[in-house]
Length: 433
View 1 (tube, rainbow, N blue to C red):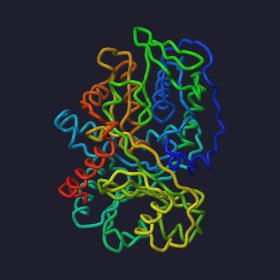
View 2 (cartoon, one colour):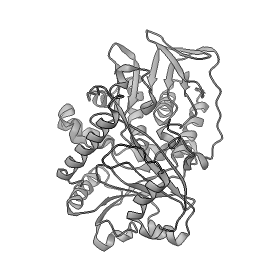
View 3 (spheres, one colour):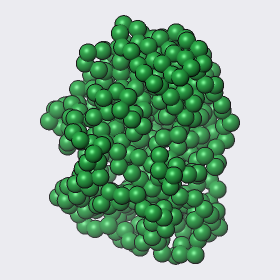
View 4 (spheres, rainbow, N blue to C red):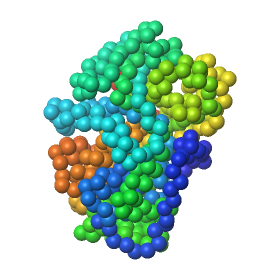
């Protein structure tokens, strides 16, 4: 991992759970073995445990939340993928309606999980989707109607003109769609609380246990340096950190990068100016700015490079320049932390779940394309259904095809730059530029 990216994050600096799990050092048996200790692995395992499967083993190469789970924006938004039109031809009109319906379940799944297990994760309601121009305002009006159709009981309201300042303290936006069903969360504390709940169900979690080899069969054998796990079912949940371990799914994704900063604690009056709703925000461009305020009165602000794919030399300075375009009155605010990490993307920017064609007992989940906090809770609930009794929802999501991305390692920067250019262009015609 690039040392500029692999630095201290806000989440690691403010985590409330001091959980430590051993390294695997023996040969053991399980009903299910999960590779990956982020939202995908822990959430799927917890869903399975709630289905009554208790003999579960989770293997994490480093520590829980090392990947995207501990580096993201903490945004809880509606949706499951970037652009559902990209999968419409594969699922049909009825399938698209069902995906849109289940894509609205994420926030309630997270709230229910927090309430059920008493997780201390700083959950707060309030999300705003932001538009710069008349095209984006038109798009937000369409989103308002769609959101209300599936969630009529929640406060959802479009603000335009000067009224936008009731939602966010910036002069750069012309419209804001407030969705009080969304919000934000301390994602690492959420994960660690879920891991604690999983361990309470009897599952065994091992950290610092990178997988060296997997042997498929009726019983899968997963080997680490000092031990192994044998189980009739397994799950690949490595996302952007798969590193070629399973070529069949590795070649269906490519990594790009996103970067964030965390300000010093700010006075109450400044936080009130930035965020009257103390909420989370993102604009609706193909490559978004996203930000939120924390319980400690810090501003977290993130984005990705808009066209060329590269890692900035100074993450604090790069993120700060974007922040000041939105909030120029923060020019004298200190930046305490900055970090970044990979976003695992498929060609259609839609999450990938399924099982290996030759090995129906080997499942996988990956490719959230930067929208991992909320969709992971939705997708992993559906995935657990597929790993147990099966469901129509699992059949629907797993039916979306995933194309191979050839020469992804050799041409990664070229591919991601070309992808960004295409998304920027198509975003204009789709009302997102």
